[in-house]
Amino acid sequence: MEEIRCGWVSDDPLYREYHDKVWGRPVRDPKELFAKLCLDGQQAGLSWITILKKQQNYEQAFANFEPEAIAGFDEAKVEELMLNPGIVRNRLKVNSIIKNAKGYLAYTADGKDFSAFLWSFVGGKPIVNQFTAMSQVPAQTPESEAMSKALKKLGFNFVGPTICYAFMQAVGMVNDHLVECISYQACVDSCAGQHHCEHQ
Image (cartoon, rainbow, N blue to C red; front, side):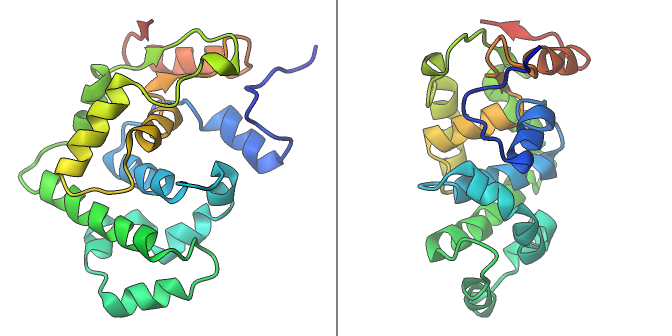
């Protein structure tokens, strides 16, 4: 029987692996969520596969996405990053990761949980959609608009509603695998182990 995957996945083995094992699986670790949010911001205007192929380069260039380390990056470090062929050399995007790290540290300074904050936009548990066609999948939702506004207030950028929705899909806050996709049930099962899921 032919394995059915979501329509956006190409035959690229890296992309398939990402779709099958990562996309839509619930992530709760605050640092991992921070890293994914920054990477999704880098995607603006580009395809996700472009960023996925550069993910390891980003991890090396940005101190494994440790917010404390990134927040200390100065102008000289930005200039150095602008010469790094392994990342997207866009000054606004490079600076956005530094801005986001500062926003993360300001938010968590008094013990607040960044993961709980982000998950609060979906009520703390994944929204399980039941789409049967790619055309049904939205580019943004009221939840992603609310997350975008809240993140901007904290000083984050490259976090518009569309980027926030792509992030929510990637980290399993919403399950947007098509119902017939081989990963749909696996994502439902992986979130059922943590909390009950919200069916739309």
